[in-house]
Image (cartoon, rainbow, N blue to C red; front, top):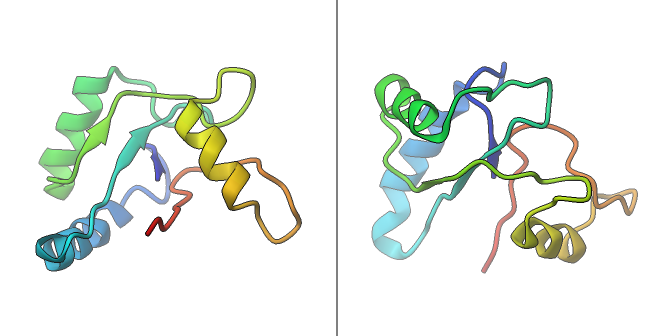
Length: 104
């Protein structure tokens, strides 16, 4: 999922960490990709954002470097994910922070 540390959705880190802890032993992973493309709600540097998530939400799942999920500099992972799973209207654009993809 693309994440943001200063978004109204940020508190869901707690529930995602609970899910991760509950199912990690069975092979379930939660992967967070820092992103500042929506309302500039993740403005800090990678280490400061990761420290915020660990301190405030006890996040232990992997958090990756800041990427772009839309536009000409879209990270290749998100290019693939969006191509494989467009929304119900056929759009491949990520609409906001904490968009999730379930991959098997």
